[in-house]
Image (tube, rainbow, N blue to C red; front, side, top):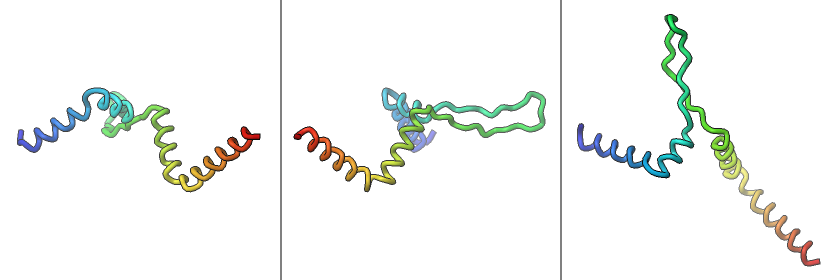
Length: 89
């Protein structure tokens, strides 16, 4: 094993250890292997990763924020001003 390969392996194993590693593996989800029928001449090699529903929701929420932050912030400020004004009177 070359020093560069060892360095990459060490970096990957460090990234996947501890609380951050568990969080990373949870966000990545579970690998679903392909369904191959026994005795069939066709063999599927490519599976897919299935993320938890909460992870998909968080990703979509982040994408929504990045796309629409220009009107979310002013709307929040406006709603806060309305609430403060309503509580004053």
